Length: 161
Image 1 (cartoon, one colour):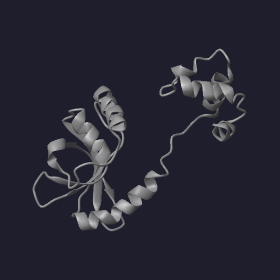
Image 2 (image 1 turned 90 degrees about the vertical axis):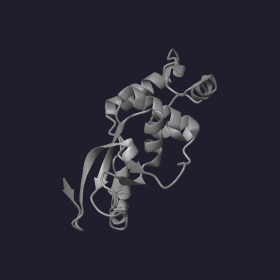
Image 3 (image 1 turned 180 degrees about the vertical axis):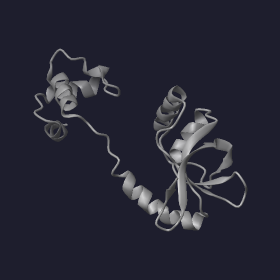
């Protein structure tokens, strides 16, 4: 259990989807992205992104504060439960913690090893590599990548593409 400086208690919790109340109808995430996440949730059977919920006046009911897209994907994937970050406070108090959560989540970048970058650049620069084997890279984009070779670094690749 975590205590915020305000004295608000919080913890990751596994919550039944129908215990979460949502005030907005749709998140605005594209249907294709929602489908991708939903399909991933079907495979993994759990979510890695934790929506933030707070308690309500009703017992065993929670109000969704953040993470509407992951909630929608979980509903579409027909998961029974999802992991959430539960803040044991009313919505008005819990929203104070949201600002910190959003700020800190920006610092949760994926760690990429230097060897992974080297291997990726070797693959991209190799004329024998099947660039369409990279998820999301179709023939047109593969041609663009080939036409802009040789890439000396990821930054060089970003500039050229």
